[in-house]
Length: 75
Length: 131
Image (cartoon, rainbow over the protein chains, first blue to last red):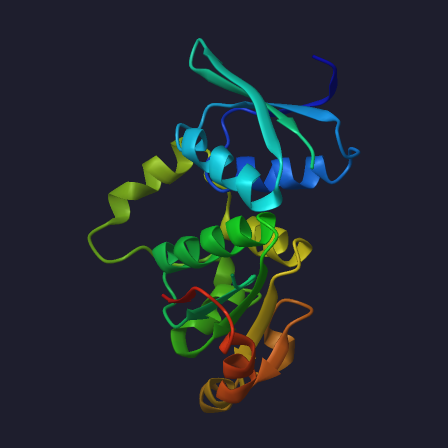
């Protein structure tokens, strides 16, 4: 997977991970992939809903040592 | 499906501020057009000085530590974020008159209007939320 940009949103609480992700995804092109690192547990459901609202695709997600990784392909 | 979220902020405490601005910024970050109508105590939330010293409900002061430890942004930061994301702030003219407040008492770039200004925005919004 080709990652265009990485956003480290660890330690941030709702709604900042989503807000930062929105602002960052605005800076990449359609089809490119944004990697987001989050520790807010609410993000698990929030990112799925958020991606759907913008038509973006979560191509992969994983959890490592309490950190959630999302790979979001921009619509 | 409506692409608008309309919010009425009518209470002026710290918890109220988080409810209002978390939903507003989350909605705006999800491609929604968002407007907040600030009325009565809700005006505190965008008052230049007031928003820096919003109070917790009586007896809930012990949550201060939780706020400090959980990475929750400060209210002025959320206000700025909301405006950056295009959330429209409408301050209630009638309440401002009653409380002796002018536009200069509030953060920049707000609209001042009456109930009809809000209703016109909210007529095709879903959801409309009241806090």
